[in-house]
Image (cartoon, rainbow, N blue to C red; front, top):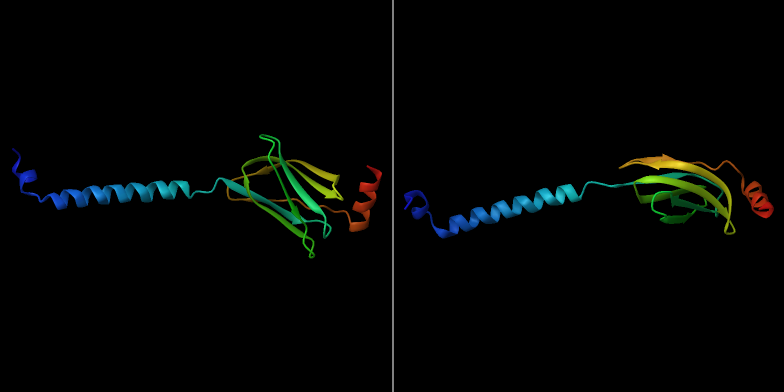
Length: 124
């Protein structure tokens, strides 16, 4: 019998096992905590809706443009998106193939004024 292991109390061996398990949990939490999302943000006419539609998996997210003309779609899974400005539920302008990369934001601005966007929606 190995005297080194025989002389160690069981609690010390249990403590080592607990420390190893805790370190494993910390390492896995750090790996899990790494972001796999990005964002799309920019300016558009206040009150309109901006939608991001994934060209890879078909997921779609929408947000309303704030009174200050800013919008942000956060925590989008990485991929490629078509970003669309909608007025009264109708698409009026599209920015195709916008890349969303890990931990980064892609700026997409819609240049039309509120009245110009409304006119485009009426024509479509």
